[in-house]
Length: 180
Image 1: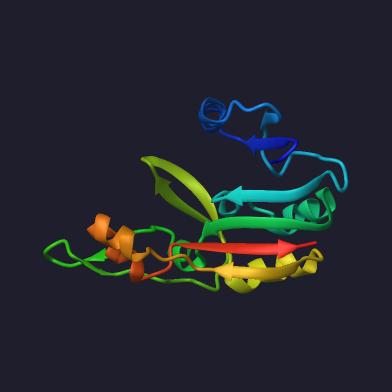
Image 2 (image 1 turned 90 degrees about the vertical axis):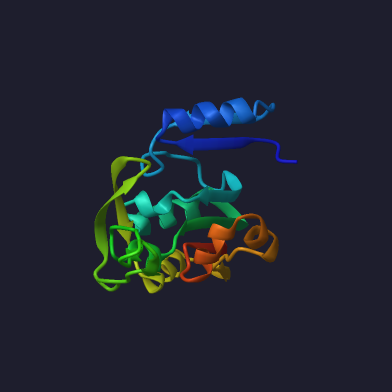
């Protein structure tokens, strides 16, 4: 029901895939880093991001920009890799002698900053922040936090995909909703 949508991504492959899936009238795609885009004040009534902000070095400035881009009462909704997931950097389980998953390591949780890890075979840089840091940036920018969710697999997923039982052992993602 949106009159217009602007999709922004640094990855040309992601934009190509989005364009294949969503060729609806009113959707425009912009190949640019979210940290570098510029929009008019109060241009949007909703800003959504999925699993991208843990790649952003300056989350404070990004929150301030999004606050400016939103109309009064506008909604800001995003998901990130959970800080428990990004803390140690290697983003993998500790395995036993029989290659069984023993536990998820959480180390250097309060040491925020850049983490080098591997994603889909490539080395990538991610920025670890605590939950307090995320909330602080959001609130300091003027937003009111309306929800915080740590998703977990439902019974249907657990039944269909037995490997999802490991996802009950630690949070992998965090979803935050805020309002201007």
